Image (tube, rainbow, N blue to C red; front, side, top):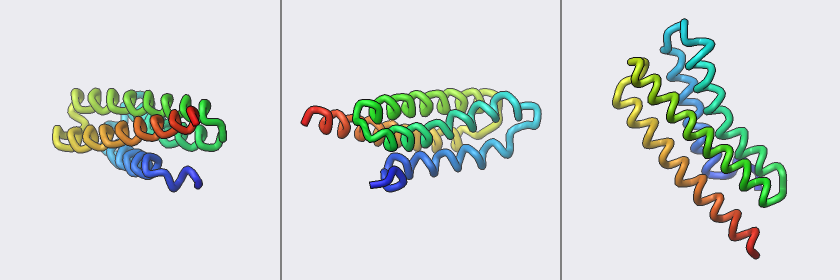
Length: 120
């Protein structure tokens, strides 16, 4: 199985693309601060899932998934900052928050699956 077949990676990819679309509406003065940070953290979610999968060692894969989980939390924090600055609507924020919660659930499930593999 390739990482692109993982449901958690697929959902994270959609989330990342939603973030890319969102930041296009951010003010130009945020280009090198909030915009850059939120794009990097959202990219890190999928990138760490992919890198962990490519390591072929369960413990390393789990660690990269935990890093991905941290990047997901960082992205949510940046979204809260964008909401506080008025760069996105409450509804858009709630939709993205819901998506992040779904990704978190999938990541935790994948980590639990990997733990079971480790204990076999």
